[in-house]
Length: 179
Image (cartoon, rainbow, N blue to C red):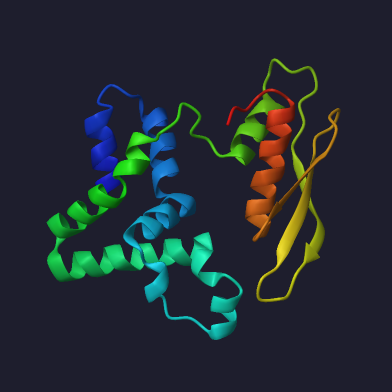
């Protein structure tokens, strides 16, 4: 709600669709994890030693969940204004860094593949090609295929991250994505 309020204030003439894409970019796991890093939450997380030793304090899902829990605790303890001050402070850099391309790579690739201007519409298909590393710290390799295109592979600590990486790599190769 706080992010939505700020977006509406910052972009009063933006259509609903544009605001929705910006909102999604600011409340997704990666954004919450970045804010959790800015807060300095990692050293205070209580976790199993095996999780900690495998880099758990750097995992975006863990940092994001911890950051969301802190926001809830601040809200419950200090009310909406305290939560608002926290969010606006630690999301300040995220608001400032909003890029023109706010869609995630998988969404952008799907939209490109389904574009009516393309003669051959096709759905991206993702497949896990490899899972390596120990059970507590796996690394996934995922391949994305689109009919009529050369496949691309990506890696990540989760299947989702690997899919995003594969989609990003394909979009870069196709000239449809800028970093």
